[in-house]
Length: 624
Ligand code: RUQ
Ligand code: CUA
Image (tube, rainbow, N blue to C red; front, side, top):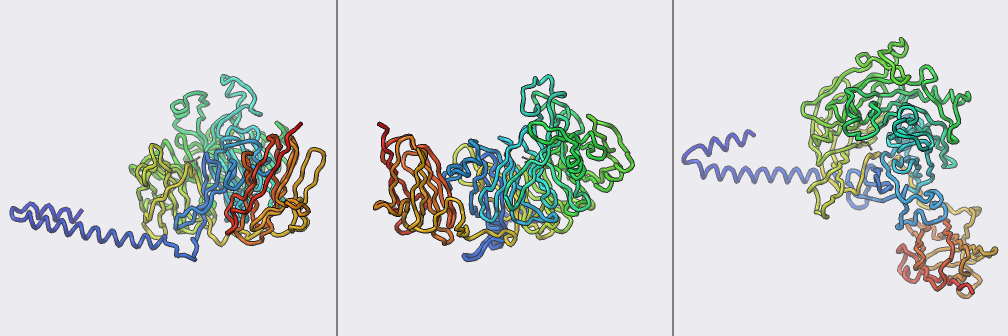
């Protein structure tokens, strides 16, 4: 700005035109030079030399791809796609017996919010939980193998969008519904919305040893829509906090009809209390689930008014406050748990809504933070210095502000329209304050064009200084809703599946490979190794299997190459089947040999110089 002033002053002189031109050229050069230096310093920040690793894993939701995307931060290099809610031909996920059963016939899912398992409010790096808004499921990914370990369906839900979030010690994995729906998804006219439709929160438990979910209980709520929610920490550890919209009970044209009230509500639920009630047998069994209505128990549920149609609510790392982001109101509202508990203690209610005591807004609210011109706040992240970071969807920026005072410290544009952001360990009790990735909904012209629809975009910011520094943008497939940025030291991936002599269906040597026939079932106990399949050691063609048309065939394959990264694939020509066995893994492919003929089998995963030779035949004898 200053320089421009000088330029116009100079160019104002009659004889100064040339001088101005020269000046201007120099100025450009200087500007370019400085931005090149700038770019160099930015590039150095994200450059990870060969042989070294990124400091962080970014575990990002893959949205309606139903997958988990793994990135390295700060390089922003994509490392892996992990299939969760959808079949994946690249890894044979959903083809082998176990994962096929886990997917239960679903071919898509809508994965919104990953949550890493926590111990004392900090990521412990063992599991990652995911919600499927499309088909009402919750999944656990084992972070020692990056394989989906379990998927559970959630009855009575209308899209568990407002989760996943975990309580401090992963006692529960909580998933509130997005759409109200009659219990059991039964038929009920929309005219009966207020009476027949319910909002439901699922409280799932996960057994880390068995790697299995169970649905501990569900919470029945008024038919509002619930939006992205969070669990308390430390002093607020017994609570979950949720935003609501459509407290208007609109059943059509929600865009207008669900945006009328000036205030919606934040809902506080004491999960500890409800857990106690369930343990005492105080629940109704509905659709096979223990259902509690918190309105039946004093101290279990409260509402607090909040400016209209809030989106996310996030608990501060110290657990003392919760911050609601406005969506339709251009502000963040800071609430105090301490003040809420005080009002609860004194039974200081301003109202009652749908049987829920309402706490007075003015008494629980600490401050409204309203940076001028900042529009569309959606979600809040934190650093290690008491600052909050909000993504502004409409004004396309990240706003940094002090939680204690509401003072706005910095604002930086993002490219464009961020939904969530994720800071390094930024939703734990101990954020790292190092990197923040804005997860943008729109890329516009950020990258080489790929036609009318572009990828989504992620902006990497260095947040270690007072001012945020925009470092780079990276493309990402649709759609990164939220992510967890976890320090690499917390995740301990296995190098191999350990050899286990007692493992069901496993065969550990070429000599032991054999075929068993039971009626019309054919069980092949085979091995895969560089560079062959052995299905039947005793046969003079150990890599061929002959069955009768109509037989049910089981290929139980064990990869006996106990070397990291030597994965073998297993594709059958024309049978539309492919699965894989990772080093030391045993997997079963089950199918009915309904097509007669001769079908080559081959390894689909390049594994050695003789990978091309790693093949065999499936011969299916026609029925008479
Ligand atoms: S909610 S963009 Cu699906 Cu994550 Cu706020
Ligand atoms: Cu085994 Cu390619």
